[in-house]
Structure formats: C-alpha cells, structure tokens
Length: 370
Image (cartoon, rainbow, N blue to C red; front, side, top):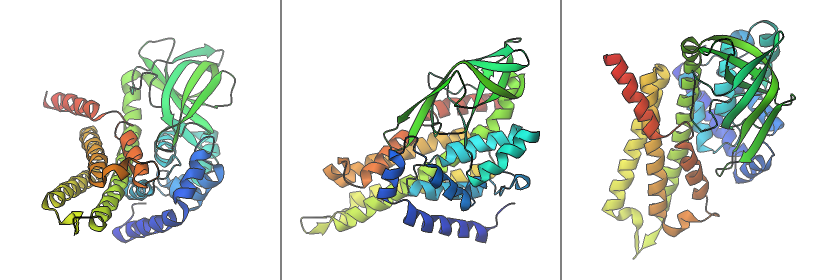
C-alpha cells in the first residue's frame, strides 16, 4: 500500500501528537533506564499505532507503506528523541526477516513483529565496527542437520532484549559461501553484552560459542551481499531521516534561544552574522531532507552513500552551531539541548562515518563509469 500525500500528512500529524504526549523528558529517562532501552509495553504501544508494520507486507499483517512514508515517520521519532530502536528493529531487522522467512517461520514471526509481541534485530556490524556483507568474521559449523555459530558481532543498537538476532557467517564447506542465520539470544552459547549508549539508547555485542541457530538462506558471497544490501540501504535511509528530525528540532531550539536571549539590549538574532549562520544551517538541513526523500523514492546504492555522507556532515554542523550559538549553557547536562547534541554526535557515525560513505560513493561511481 503506497500512501498518498494526504495519508502521509495524517501519519506525520498523528506521530507528532503521540510523541508530544509519550516522549517527554520523563518518558525518555524511563525508557533509557530500562535494562535494554526497550520496555515491551512501550514496544507493543508502537505496534498498536501500526508503526511496527510499516515495512512489512500486507499479507503478513503489515502496511507495506513504502520507504518515503517510513522516512516521514522516522523524522518525527527523531525529533522526539525516541529511545526505542524503531529503525534497527522495525525497519532493518523486520525488513530483512520479511525478505527471507518462509513457511511456518514466517507465520510465526511476521504477525508478531507487526503487533510488537516479538522483536528482531540484524547485527550488521563486525567486531571492528565495520559492516561486512560478503566476508563476515563469524563461522557456521555443521552439527548433523543443524548448525552452530562461532564468532562475534559488533555493537548494534536495539539488540538487547530482542527475541531474535539475524547474523551472517561464513559456511564451512566453501570459503565463498555465506549464510544468514536466526539466533535465539537465550540459547546456549550465545551471549549479549548490553551497554547504555551516551545518547540514552542501548546497544549490545554478541558473542557466540557453538551457539545453536536456524539457517535462513545461504549462497555465494556476492549473491548474499546483493540480497542483504537493499535491506541495509532501507535501514540506512530511515536512520538518516531520523537524524534529520533530530537536527531540525535542535535548530528550532537554537532559533528560539537566539530570539529570546538579549545582549546589550538586543536579541542575539538581530546580529547579521548569526542570521547568516542560521540561514546556512537551515538550507543545509532542507537540502539534506530533499536528498533523503529522493533516495527513499529511488534507493540506489549511490544515492544512499551520498545521503549518508551529507547527513553525517549536517549532523555535525548542527550540533556544533547549536552549542556555539547557545554558549556555555549548551554544554550543560541539565539543559534540553544536550540530549539533541548527544544524539546527533552518536548518529553521525552510527551507520559508518562520512568518510566511509564518500569512499563507497567513489567506488560505486568508478565501477559505474567503468
């Protein structure tokens, strides 16, 4: 179901109303204080709103709303500094599972993901922090007709408290073969090390020592990378939309401050240099938002890499300008801006750095030219 303009606006309006009531500072602290950063009741509340089914097919109970609508929702959740892992679970993890799950597994998992009764996360990152789609460090070990996994996965937001973990591993028979597996985090041999992140959310690393798992799909490394990359791109684009929502809120907070703050009897916003800096920042954000929505409408690898590089820069510029224009108060723990600064600082490199995105873009452009 592709949402028309009016339906998308209704989605934005309802998201803004809900976040104003349910994502205040007290609610964010309570969510962050939860051991996994995702209380099951809060997650089910997102399911009741229909948001957890945005990326899932209608035949499985989802909305199949399309990436542009998902980005509009993610933008509002980013404005509200939602602690719960909407992008990593409801878009990245659920979206990938929907691509590969079949039969009884699909009937068991997909409707439960829509309602929030279950939660799945794809652990994309390797232990060194890099994303490796075609050469994962973990190894699959044949155990009769079953499989076990040996190795580690890097820090992934939202992994703590998940009901299922998606991981890739090298297959033993052929070094060029890669498998995608579903791991129950409670199974013997699997250990999640959860940790609070400095922006209030939570992440976890996975260690596997002959951990039981279920093979979902296997194939040559290149074919598996082609299967996995679209899901990663969708999650990355939604993440960028979330960042831009946070950046816009930080901008608005800064604009309000310089209009109210007076120096030598004049509002700071009366200074022409401050006006120019705010205009430049506003234009940067709007350009990045337009690129985000264009990428959501046509999600090529080249556009996604360009978007990642641009949004990382905008995130850094936003929190840097916000702190400078606020002065010392912008650095304090108690002031509201601090939460936005921490979120932007972490988010800028959460799906690899701007330099890595530019490197990807250069390789993709050269390959296309060649």
